[in-house]
Length: 118
Image 1 (spheres, rainbow, N blue to C red):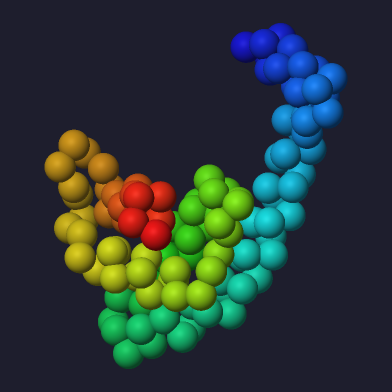
Image 2 (cartoon, one colour; image 1 turned 90 degrees about the vertical axis):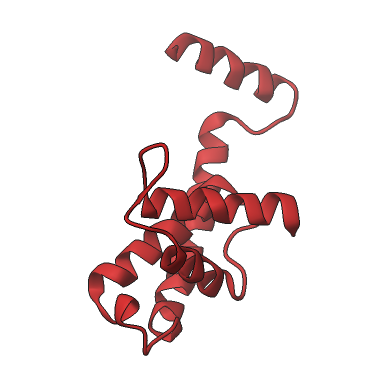
């Protein structure tokens, strides 16, 4: 697997594309900036709701939003994604059909909304 990644990276670099390492660095930079903004927005996200009044609830929301930014750096973190992700978390049971946890299900629902509807 390592050799195939190295070959793919070399092929992209030869074609003038970014290497895997460069893309990871760019993604990390986007995620870092997004995480700063997410941390600013967490206390403003449904502040009166019991779920997000706790550190655990805010951490769960933060993980969903940061995972989105890592998966979709071209979209990144945008205004009101925190409310959309929080709403999705609130609507899901602790365990979703198929064995997904609430956090993971909220992440995939958020991705579907962004990719297919927006």
